[in-house]
Image (cartoon, rainbow, N blue to C red; front, side, top):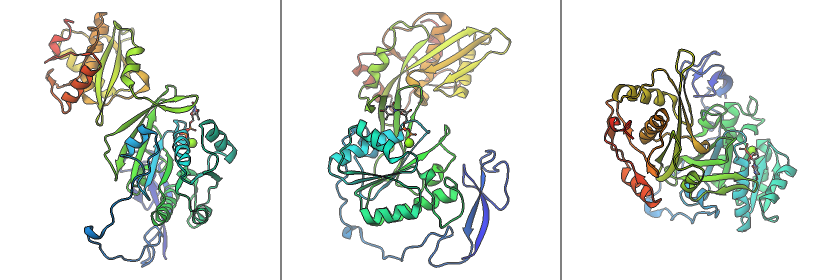
Length: 433
Ligand code: TYD
Ligand code: MG
């Protein structure tokens, strides 16, 4: 084994022989950290010092056994996102910002598994056993089948897995686990990658479905999980605003199911509860004739979700007009303002425009364009939009409203809620509301 020191960007995995302040590949600052790789030729170790497994013969599809039934948790929003429950020996990365509810969701999932007589081992390196036990009890976990261990050493974790032979495993979180075999502190790219690969080898052989928790920042990167995406079978992201109660769980990658499913939860005193009809929540909290408020039917994967766009347009007090967006892309807002300015009689040149998506949700469906424009038009004209109207459509730079993929599904969902689709062919019809 011949070791060499290199520097690796924690954001995009770019490698360099020298430390650099700014990553030439992704442009992030201060993301390079020291890593050690094996540059010597080795038959038994990969370049990162991970043991290679013996060569196997290829197998005919016909000789391959049919897959085993999936492990269903009973938390239907969660099972759906996984594509119908856990697959034997699969490694799932549950990522999200710190404090968003990853441990809470995981404890709820494992409580349900333990109740089905699955022997669960929950390894935490973040909270004490007492803290986790306390939470598990509060969330109604079965006391017999759930084992909790505080441990951060990879070697001890592997020994425990071998001794206890759990039927389901949780590692909370990957950033605090480390191995004595390789240099670097817990949370560094080399540790995160090595620990994950070693755990993966173990659970694949023992066929233990495993949930690995990983923290990410707002942009969905830094601190490891990005470099793990290609390693694990499934990447789930738990999103939301900490100050709001809604949480959205989506699959960013799934080797065993579609990536188009989303699950919706609400953070309550009893943990995360499933939200079956998010549209009703939106309607309940919104006055019917609200000025500057427009409804849109956004497609999150295959699921239509009714969302509310609020706009506030106000005369600019000091020179340069402000454009701010919460839960919506600010650049898209700037573009829509320019299109409105060009193709309608609305004058926004000396107006501040603020956009908010209610419920702490993020709206990224391009067909939300029309709802954003409608909300702006409503606010500047100080008149509410027609009651029960729903706007969706992507707006082109020429001011037309373009048909989009899945418009039919959107339309059906609108009708099912007893609302009306507001059909517009171009933006010129907006100001005469
Ligand atoms: P947690 O699952 O610890 O977040 P993560 O593991 O992603 O860092 O969630 C922490 C937040 O959830 C905390 O601010 C309190 C809140 N919470 C509730 O509101 N209700 C509950 O029943 C629980 C367990 C937590
Ligand atoms: Mg946690």
